[in-house]
Image (cartoon, rainbow, N blue to C red; front, side, top):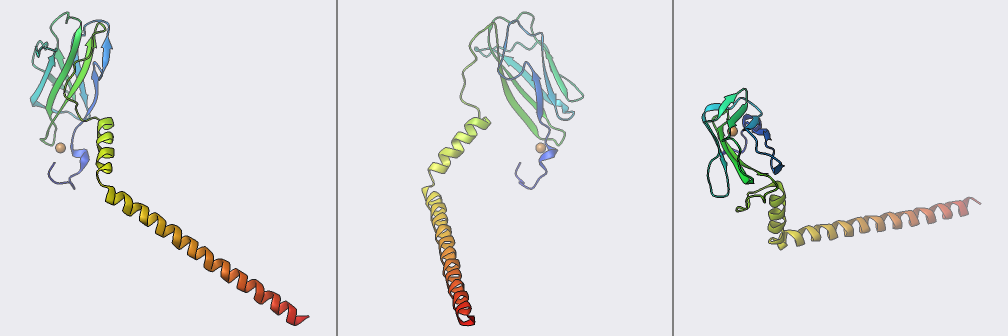
Length: 176
Ligand SMILES: [Cu+2]
């Protein structure tokens, strides 16, 4: 999206999948289904179910029905790590894509170059924050200034209260 002001809702998104991300299945699934927030376009839909060697185990082209994309699998996938690599065209015309890892028969998941996930994104944000110490110290300076101002305010109030107290005492004294 080049225009940041574009409505985010215009973009369809993946709501659920079978197998689900990171699923450890006991036996081979017979199909893969991807459920989207809206009816994605039939044109441009592509789903690959790849093993560690890159072999595709999808038995046919994906079918799109009411936002659900389904792909039959080759019967009896062997135990192993797999990735559902999908790409569809959102109703607004934007292609969206993702990778869903799963395993069969207690196999180890496929290892790959890390895909940005909320966890890794948070970690990289934290790393980015570490590389900008000026911002950090500027924030600390503001904090100190605020404390000093509050302290000064407190001191002014204390002086005023002290003065008022003495004024009151003096008035009381003169009235006696
Ligand atoms: Cu979009």
